Image (cartoon, rainbow, N blue to C red; front, side):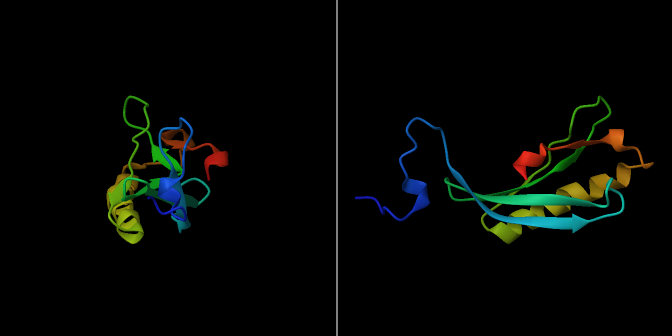
Length: 108
């Protein structure tokens, strides 16, 4: 018998997976247009956590560099994302918003 109070065991009626939003953080950084961005941390039903920003830098070919952080805890996932994402901001050479791609505001 499954624990009926655990969100991970809810019947999905054909959906593929369910994740839970644990936290949304707002990071201030002058290298980003608007001087801040958000990070959403999700607990995944498979038992780990993923941190995703609402902004990505574009690679040389114009495609977004989809960086995320993955770990066994919420804070570790946030740290993993920041460790990967923040150094990439050093590539920003001007205040050119074309270097960035933003997530749909409805996602955050």
